[in-house]
Every structure is written in C-alpha cells, then in structure tokens.
Image 1 (cartoon, rainbow, N blue to C red):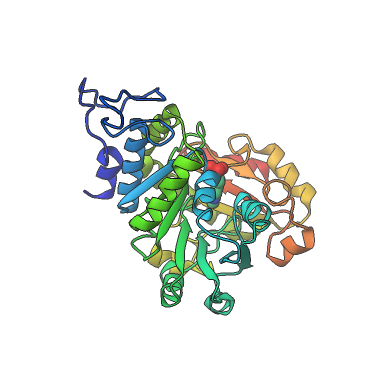
Image 2 (cartoon, rainbow, N blue to C red):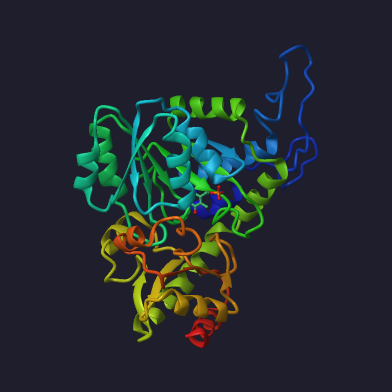
Length: 378
Ligand SMILES: *Cc1c(COP(=O)(O)O)cnc(C)c1O
C-alpha cells in the first residue's frame, strides 16, 4: 500500500461481530475469559484495548514499522522509552529541542543518574566528539523547535551504528507524511500524536514505533507496568484525524511556502526560518530527507524588542495566539516568553533565538486570508 491508502486502511478491518466499518470505541476495562488466562488476546485494558490496537497498527503502517505502542501523551511515550536506560548511561540530544523533552531529560532522568549532552547536531563532528563508552542513545529532533534547523538523520544514524548506539527520532514536526525516519535507518520513531496525526487540536496522545522486537518488548513492558495509556475515545479521535493527514499536511505546506516567501520579501521582518527557503542553511538536507518542507515557519521582526512582537501577536485575528501546532487552524506563538521562557535571555540569544521571534503553525485556511492577516498585523 502507498502512503495515502495506508492513512485510510492500514490496520483497519471492519469489526467482526457487527461489520462496523469504523473501529468502535471499546469502552471497557476488562474482557471475559473462558478459563483462567484463556481469552481472545485481551485480558485487561491497561495492557491492550482494541481501539488502541487499531491506532497502533495504523501508526506502525505509516512509519513503515513492525510495531507501535500508543501513550496518553507525547512525553509519556518518551518517558516509556527512557525507562530502559540505567544510571550511568549517557544520551546525546540536540540543544534546539522541544521544551517538554528538555524538562523530562533534565529534571526527571538526570536526577536518576542518566547523563545527557545537549549539542548542535547540525555539525556532525559535535556528535562524534560527544560519544563515549556509556553512550546508549542519540535522540534526534528534526526539524528543530523553534529555529527549524534540519538534522541529517542518515549521517547521524551511520555514526551511531558504527558505535552500536540506538537512535530515536522525534518526528512530530514533520509527520510521517513528510519524513520516514525508520527508512533513513533510525531504530525508533516517536510522535506527539497531539499535533499533525490528531490534526484537530482536540486530543493529547503519543506513540513509539520500531521494527526492533527487543526494543518494543521493553516498551510494551512499560505500557503494562507504568501504564501511561490513552483512553479508547482518544485513540478513536486520533484514528479519525489520521484519515485526512495527507491532505491536511499537503495544504498546510502549500500555505506555509506562500507565507515564508511573503515574510522573506517583507522589509519589516528580520530573519525568516523555513527549511523550504533556498537560503536555509540545511535546505539541501531537508530536500534529501523530507518529502516537503513542513508547515512551521518562524520569523523575527526587524525591530528586535519583545514589545513589538507582543503587539504583532495581539493584532493577528486568524492566527490564534496559542501553544501547540499541527492542527487545521493556524496558530502563532512567542517562544521567548512561552515555550522557551525558562531559558535565560543570554542563552536564548546565543542559540539564535531572538526576543522578537514568532513561530507560526500554518493551518489549512485560504492562504489569501492568512497573508492578509499578517499584512494587517504588520
Ligand atoms: C508537543 C511535542 C512533544 C510532547 O508531546 P505532548 O503530546 O504534548 O506530550 C514532544 N515533541 C515535540 C516536537 C512536540 O511538539
């Protein structure tokens, strides 16, 4: 099956007892057993639920993975993967990373004795220099947040493989429609299904997918033991959202390209960060590893102060000021005071994050209306 067909059909078969075409919401915590431990594959819903199984098969299909496991949130999925590491283990990750991932690594797993290196992975020698005998995982996020840098998945995987290190990719910003990390050699792919997969800003969820059975056994052990599982209604909403993933992402990207071009030629903007612009430093890598350039665009104003940015965001009407991304509606956010507010100004600016930087999650509205909205805000 090709990708668009998979979004509708992967893991989906009409329900056997009634012929329901859509996967039912199995709102149950337990299942009848004919004799102790003799059942139809389901014994207790923390371990498994048929609505969740349908979603897991669908996500595995989209990522070209043998297995997938779904969680109550994106960070719960990451938490389940991280729990297979032990005190003394070392993990390399990027310095331009989702704020919640940074907090999980720094404030939950570091105190348990796992060591993290946060580096700029756009320079491969930085990765090579960080590797030591205790290094067990390279955690890649690409495109990065909020500066939309692109990390070369294949090249990092090659370095990791030659050192017997596992690689995992947070594929949330790209979505499986635009980027297939397992095909590029990564061992594990992670999603906040809250974003493009769900696509409608109405559900929180996460997923891990892999073709490595040993890794998935450890993940399933965490599903059963730590139990950060999604409810069947949330799985259903995500299943429903995924059906339109391809068309939603296609339209969002089309809009994002127009907006990036508009911002680039606007004398009132400073920097414009979009991997699809030919002057983006990793434009060629994005072209190589992504089907298209995504629908996230960041830009700063010519005047670099925080007040101008705040005024701008107060004025947009269609772009809603809110955290999150990947929904059908366009959002605008202010990383310096919202997602990255806990990072000191000096450290932020050293990483290239200016106070007037704004991040757009471009939705599927008419491009003309989105452009007009930005124009009146300027
Ligand atoms: C939102 C997000 C997460 C966390 O997912 P939740 O569903 O909010 O727990 C992780 N990584 C990235 C890139 C995200 O955007």
